[in-house]
Amino acid sequence: MEEISETLLRRRFAAFLPNAEFLRSEECRGGHINRTFFVDARVYGRERRFVLQSVNKNVFKNYAGVMENVFRISAHLGSKSLDVGSDDPTRDHIHFLRTADGGMGVDGSIGFWRLYRYIGGAEGRLRATTPDEARAAAEAFGRFQWLLADLPAPRLWETISSFHDTRRRFANLEKSADADAVGRLSAVRGDLEAYLALRPEALKVQEAFERGEFPERIAHNDAKYSNVLMDSATNRAVCVIDLDTCMPGLSLHDFGDLMRSMSCDRPEDEPDTSKIVVRRDMYDALVDGFMSQADNFLLPAERALLPNAGIAITLETGSRFLADYLDGDRYFHIDYPEHNLVRARSQLALARSMLDTL
Image 1 (cartoon, rainbow, N blue to C red):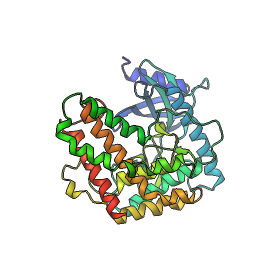
Image 2: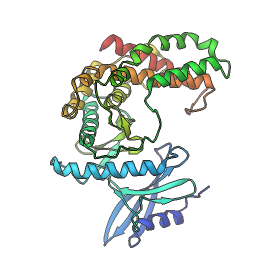
Image 3: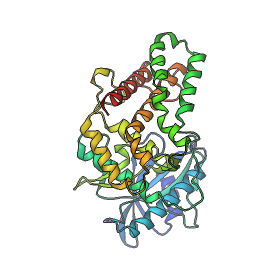
Image 4: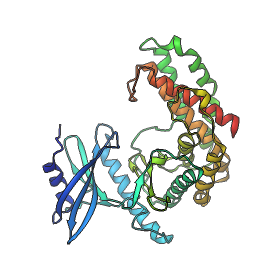
C-alpha cells in the first residue's frame, strides 16, 4: 500500500514540474474513488494551484485507457473552445499536464498519478434546486457533447464494459433473483415484478439505437450537477469535470442521467416514495439547457426520445440497486441493511412519475 505523505506528494508533483517550488498541499475529501490533493506551488515566480490526483487502479483497471481518453478529450476541448469563440477558454475545460519526460502521469503501487490545472473562482455543488441551476448544468453537458461530436478517430477506450447496456442490467437482475444468494427474494418479489413489467419502457432508447435510428456518440456517463463547476460569482456553468467515465455511448444516456438526478428534489434514497414526484419546471429547464447546445448535432429520433432517456436510466439504475440487494450488497456502499432496497423503490417511484408526467 502506497502511503500518501507530503514527501510522496512532493515527489509526484516534481515529476511534472521539476523546477516549481512546492509550497503546500491539502487533500480534497469529496471523492469516493480517487485520492485528490490541491497543491500550491511557485512557478516562474508566480504562485499557482494545481490538482494532483491518484487514479484508483482497483476501480479503473484499464487506467492507461482512461488516461488516453481524458488527454484526448482535454486537448480536443481546448482546440474547439478557441474555434467556437469561448468566453473563457482558460477555464472551460480541464487541462491535464504531461510529466517532464512527456508521459501522461506517474505509476504508483495503488494509483496512477496525474496533474491538472486548478480552475479558480468555481465550485462544485451537490444538488440543483432551481430551474436556473438545472438549465445551466444541462447546457454544460450539451455543449460538452457538441464539442466532442467531431473528435477524430480512433474510438475512445471503453473503460467500463457495457456500462449502459440496459438489457444486460435487467438480465443481471433476473440472475440475482434466480440465485437468491442471501434469501431476500421472497420479501422483494413485488419489487422485482414491478421492475420486470417496466422493462419494455426501459429498453426503448437501446432498441432505437440497435435499429440504427441514431449513432454512437461520446458520453460522460455520470451527468449530474456535482460534475459541473459553477462560477462562484455569476452562477454560470464553467466546465464539466470528472472525465474518467467518458467513453463511447449514447447522448441520451447523459440526458437521462440529468433527468434522474435533477428532475425531482428528493434524494435517490428517499424512503417515502409518496414524496417522489417529477418537477415539470426542472424537466423543462433541463430540456431547454441541453438542447440549446445539443440541437447542433442531435437527430430527430434522439430528440423524440428525450423523456424516455430519463425513464431508461432511472429504471436501469434502480435494477442495479435491487440486484445488489439480492446479492447481499456487494457493490454499492450502504449506510444501513435496507439501503439498496430503499434506493430501488425510490428509483421505481421516480420512473413511474416520469411515465405519468412527461
